[in-house]
Image (cartoon, rainbow, N blue to C red; front, side):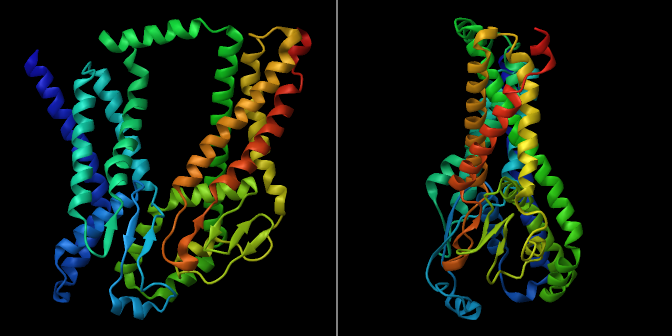
Length: 409
């Protein structure tokens, strides 16, 4: 039995290490290829390793204070670039990869009846690996925020691990099953109406945001096709060659989750910024000078066809999701109190949607430089206000409109 536990802990720890290596390899492999093809440049491989580690940490929410070499700063000719500045815009694809792989690991460890030994060893190894990357990548030019190195990558991994294990943890026996039984007994002390309200609010709000994010993904794909000519024009203007173009494309793909959330904020009406003082919303775009990155060719110029009519997407998504949860809710509430409970569910859905939205907006916005470059992405609280108001109004319409079941009852 002891040998089995040790083997399970080793296997889980190894898989956690693989998760770190896979994420690190995404920037490190192309950077290593660049190093091999430019050996005569005199730059050591350690510089490329530190850059890859910094990118991986940045993708997990770690902020960096950058100080550029005076020669590089003068060649860029940007205001404030010669002073230290904050780099905080995270390529969210790294966090998504870690989260999904941690979910898989959590599910597999519990299915294999490893219970606590496997997840605990995986968590310890992942935290140690993230800390090693943070400490080994420190340089005078790129100083990470150490408390974020200690907390955020491990927190993302832990949340994925717990969610992955959630579906199986109640059947694993032992202490985990006792915790689930106690939680179930506690929830049964609540009235059926409260339990139904909580379930409808949580499911309705979360499914609303998920539906709008899916719609934003579709809109992003359409924009890539519709704005293909400006994107290609920016590629040609960079003149980076095949290798440089491939690296730029990979870097932009790592920011694709960010772009989808920006489009979601745009669909909600809140819009997003592409530099301090600029704004992109359904009413139009006020854009100043931008870095010559092809991905910015997706942004429509001037007035957008339809304007705020695009808000119909989150409104319809909310109405559909509210109708779905309404059917289960009305079975648990008295008929003479149904309006009150339905209105309370609309409020609960709007709160859940607002919390999720502000978290997504906060995680996908940030700074890439000084001055004008200090704000990219949606403003979290503005996006949250738009989503809360839209969700509340649309959920009231969807929940309080009588359906066939109500009329027949």
